[in-house]
Length: 252
Image 1 (cartoon, rainbow, N blue to C red):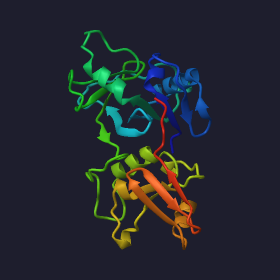
Image 2 (tube, rainbow, N blue to C red; image 1 turned 180 degrees about the horizontal axis):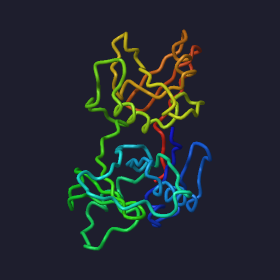
Image 3 (cartoon, helix red, strand yellow; image 1 turned 45 degrees about the vertical axis):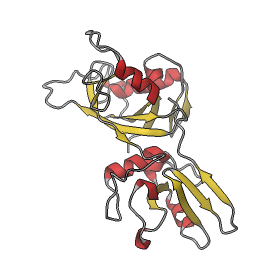
């Protein structure tokens, strides 16, 4: 499994000095964040994602960046392969900055490192282009992350979720949703708040990331988990105490 690096776009572009984060090292200073992301750009095996966040840091959009189709030749990653880092890099960007980038006129000049823009000028709802150091260009399409509302577009009729639904819940929750657990969401179960066999939907508004241990705790007598709204997990203990876990707050 690839190590995960979270990096604010403004830090990569030099607009601001906001910290990044990894599961292994924890918070990263801006310089190290840029170094790790640049090392990932040297690896052909790195995976790239972009997460859009609101003014509270909650994820509201997400997309996986992939090589552009029908492009004959992609530039090689810059620098020696020895200094490459195969990682999953999640670039965070605010809704406000994304709107500003969509409104910027095209200059005609070649895009620089960490350039992000819609493929069609002004078409913010279409595909976007992410340019990595060295000139490699990736395409990303954004899906809404069901954090405050859920339109059920990714709901399935089976017990197991689709890969996309699972990933959107992982991005929204980031960690196990038990208030004292910090297990990463991508290593946790996709767990139904209302059990599937009792009529619970396999949908983002009825699911959360739970580590296997916390999943088992939730199934014990007296425990209860509800979602007052998508991404907000309300745990009730056997003694009647209630704890609410909000969606993860990203730095962007």
